[in-house]
Amino acid sequence: MLSRLLWVFAVFLGHCSFALKFSSVTDHVRLGDARGKVVGFVDFNADKATDILFQTDNSISVYLWSREKQRFHLHQLLSLNGSSVVDTVAVDLDADGQVDLLTLTREGGRCHSMTVYWMKPHSRGPAIEYQEVIGNGVLSPPLVLDGNGDHIPDLLTHSCLNNTSTLWLSKEFLREFQKETISLSLNYTSSYYVDLTDDNLADVVVEGRGSSGRSLLFWQRNPSCGDETSFLSPSLPVPLPFPLSSAAVFSPLTFNDIDGDGEIEAVGVTCPDPDCTTAHVHILSHQSSFPTSPDGCGVSGTQPVNFTQVHTVAVHGESVSLSSHPPVLGDLDLDGYPDILLPVSSSSGVLLLVPRQCRDNCNGSKVTLDPQWIPVTNGNVTSAFFFDLWEDVRPHPPTHTLFYLTYKNKHLHISFSRSANE
Image (cartoon, rainbow, N blue to C red; front, side, top):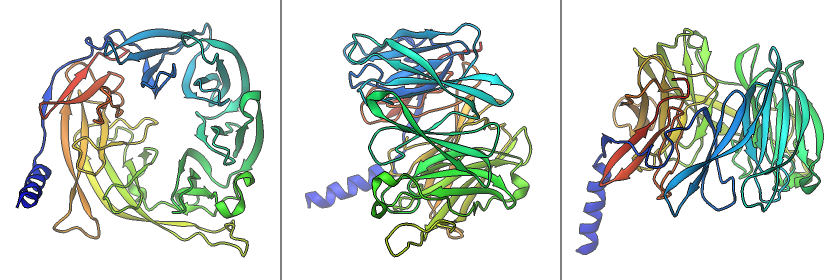
């Protein structure tokens, strides 16, 4: 009898929804003076607490989180004179337990130089040991991945001068890289590190434009080939089934199990016009069929994955801010389905698309997307992220108008501060 009552109570809770209520904790956690854009959430001082990395055109700073005081404190990492920082990546490239910084600064046109700031390990506070420029002619921020199975972060960059990519294999404590150049058959737009071939190993996926529109290239990692073989030759381009009429502007993809079936879906946003006043959010399912040779290794020159569009929702009346960011996914209502967060540039708020189990007129889709508007009154939202601020296994999304969601008394509490440009 008790078990039956508990089951009924669990079902009741599953159908309850949390009410949205707005309050601010920004000043309480000492982020009211934060400036710049958020470029990372990372444990920068190795105290097992997540810190927030900020970047302006000529500086990089980190707000270090104190569990004891339940607030952040500012630590200035570096200031650059005469250089324009385009992007920053925080990653431990030499496997010494201390996160390093990698920056892209503008060279001219689409080209950037790539600089590593090697951080001093085991210091009382974050401190730069030395810096070095490791690459020029880089198109966009590098993709962090494990390129050779040694469990050390490596980098994948793309050239602004020709259609090639470079795999930078870290030599750990030597602070050196072994470089491998890869030719592409697409005009590069973005890259991902995700397992879409269902072998429990993440693959490198490069997106670009080709003769058939938006397509993906795959480099599959296969355990049968040995970890030291790096990547195989790329697959043939795999077309993405986006309607061409809605693809004047598009976001990078993001990947997650949207419908809870154990398979990863791709989520992308397309717009028919640059203002993006009508955005289409697409969910793509995939089937993997990577052929193998007699020795068990994948065969290059094949199409390992096929995509099918299973659901699309149109968002009207607001200008969705796509910029270079993919849709952001996180389970806000803790129902087991990732929610989709879209910044809206023309109004003060964000759009939350909540997956619900589809019951009628599903057309093969297991979920529908329920739009929910979350207003923010302190300025236009430019981007959004999910972040567990209180470390209570609840997601909180900040933007870099800094905006957090927290759970308290079964309500969502949101805090925000003004954007860096105000």
